Image (cartoon, rainbow, N blue to C red; front, side, top):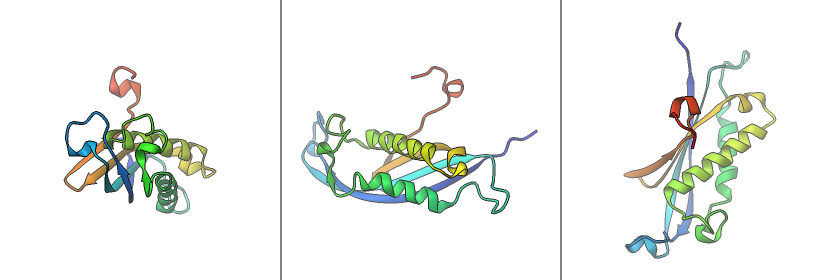
Amino acid sequence: MNTHLWRLTVRDDFAAAHALRHYEGKCERLHGHNFAVELTVEGQNLTPDTEMLLDFKVLKTGLKRVLETLDHRLLNETPPFDRLNPSSENLSRHIWRSMAAWLEAHPDPQARAVRLHSVTVAEKGAQSATYMELPSEVGGRAG
């Protein structure tokens, strides 16, 4: 028997400045980016009435709320990046965890039923960092 799965992806962006700590090169100096963000969720159950996994509008609203906390900021002065290096890797993890909490607390049961699959952050179109948390049975050891 086959298992079915749907994945939904939304994209947004934000503008911010950062300086990479302990980096040897020009990116250690203050500079800015228009960060592109891609968020993907997955699930197995469509709603009986609309036959949708989750309304894209719900995902876009959540992502926009998370990105508002980063938009037009100096990331090095914005928690948690006042302590963590504001790298694309750390940004993708922060957005993933913020979105996971937002979905878990959402009043719509469909939002709580989807699983956050991945968050990708790109400083430029040619390179990006993707963060995901795998179930412990998939990833082997728990981190």
